[in-house]
Image 1 (cartoon, rainbow, N blue to C red):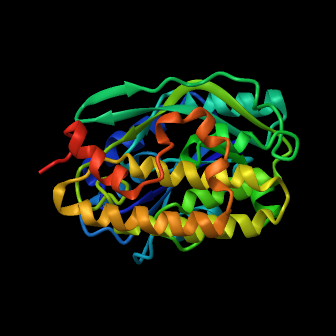
Image 2: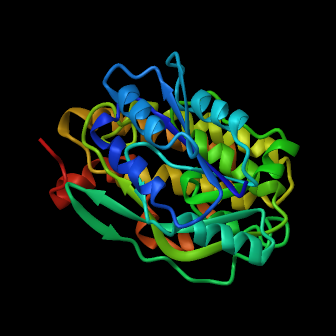
Length: 318
């Protein structure tokens, strides 16, 4: 079998049919869809059973008690039979040709990991993000560690060779956020070749509801510090420190720029303060990192600046 697509599900009945239909319309042949219902309390499981009844040869499912997305994906990995593994979140959807293009790229380039671009979907509007075409890819981390800086951490933008995952015993750790960052970059370390399809093929849905920890300003963002410390230990001087520091700065500062509701302003302040403490321990030279050479607007080290700037620009949501 060429490919296994793993879909963890938790209370996403509103979007689930669109997601599964997009996967059933894939132009790739000889693939499977593995849906893991993580103890949903809405009618997600009923929808999954309905799709399984109609497409039993392609779509498999398993219902488990709620233990989080990492556990659900790991169970999916244990069931997967494909040569390559892909992931899709159940509130998102994909281009009909996504997995054929990624798989063909993997085979033609003899690559262990393939990445693609993505679109943002918000309130029915689609924003196609510009995908930077560069020559950083088509190599591995040891030869070109800058791949870490140019790549995306989302596991759902990649397909991974199953042999690579199994051989190196890579799995999702028990985090509720940034779990895919750790998984993806652990896999990157062992990949013989990482390539990219410079086309936005994935449709990532931005949600306003409280159940989505990636929206608003989550108090779980501090898990990033543990994830990055674990990743640093995993790489253990495999590549120069500055590339891991780049990742740490990238994922903290992008949240500094997040628009927040007034009631969450103190939470943001605390996260920024904690981030500076973390970065000082992670790399005492972080303020000199080359991240700031290409992100000039981010070169502000005052907590007050990052808290007040939304007021100045009128971004605060009441």
